[in-house]
Image: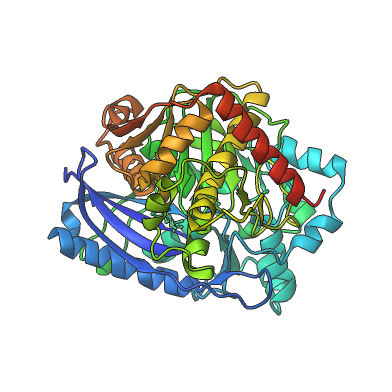
Length: 494
Ligand SMILES: Nc1ncnc2c1ncn2[C@@H]1O[C@H](COP(=O)(O)OP(=O)(O)O)[C@@H](O)[C@H]1O
Ligand SMILES: O=P(O)(O)OC[C@H](O)CO
């Protein structure tokens, strides 16, 4: 059997293809940026056909880069930005509207109008989620209500819904397979974590006809094969997971209590809770880590909307730095921010606050506060927000991890990783391969095609590139975090 695995990683800002060998070594990669469309305040859209064309292009580039033919690829793994919603015509394969992206807030008023404490509880009990525009269901309902004729066509069975994984699988298989995996399904607000299937009561509440929905499968399963004419030969599609769940697999967080934290534009922290569906009392999400052989493995997730984006803001909006990497040099220039805190609530606050009305602030400025202090405060804010999530997990009664496994662009900043270890009083570990999202999808596809016998084999492949040990005095750690809690309280709207 061929030993290379192709991973398609369709993210919010880019589409990439990576080829891995069985040991997880990168053989080739190709990437292209994805344009963002903001047609109205709070609206964010993607061109779904462009996503498909970009996917074809990066896969072909990666194959050419590695000098491999499609016949030398054992399987395809697909991972994707989650929640983003596409509805298309089953006959023509044409989307009826641009994709509505996870960040899109157009259904905020609908969610607010339907919010009652009882309903929040009902939804959380079934789905582990909150009634928030972030998740797919209200986006689907919006499309059915605002695109002319869409509701009748959906009821007649003419339309299909999918998150980006389903959309790409449909296109890759020429419309033969309309499927999604359980980790993507559980981000829609339509999927019942207990029954592990679509829930008729939820479909009725959101007004979504069952005929729109893809079949829900395990993360390592048979998703058909790519059409032979696309890449020169058919390639089996055997692995699928949402990007944060794929990163959890790529980080080999397979034991309960293991946590990975991904620092890209935002930060997503996922704690494996095993077969136990831990219900957060602190506004974390209960979600799936993965589902294999019909067995769900659950997780607690905290989502922070602004992490690396705070560094982009320093670079692009206020122009204090010339590059993201330069932030590290500035942070090392001062030994303290002397009470200055930057709360990057640019788009409200995510977990555990869920406060869409909060806005950002810099607090505690004096005449001595220069560029270094402000840059350092921005980097520190990412660590304080991570501590907020760990505190919420601690308050939910989970055992805190022995070490935090990190990845994503910002994990390359050694100063941030050391401050993170200090502030959490927990070791931070950065793996040799930081493209853990693509790697996780490749591992799932490898499991699906039989290249790996089990998760144990995969966990042997994880290797630490750098370990950051906590070294801060307890007193300082406590007083710094107290200052952050006070700073957040000053920007909150409720
Ligand atoms: N050395 C660095 N220090 C701080 N932030 C960084 C550094 N390198 C990259 N970043 C930040 O990481 C983000 C890019 O990470 P990436 O994982 O590619 O994100 P995404 O997949 O969300 O687009 C950017 O927001 C950038 O500002
Ligand atoms: O594409 P990313 O890496 O920004 O991840 C997006 C998340 O899946 C949204 O829930």
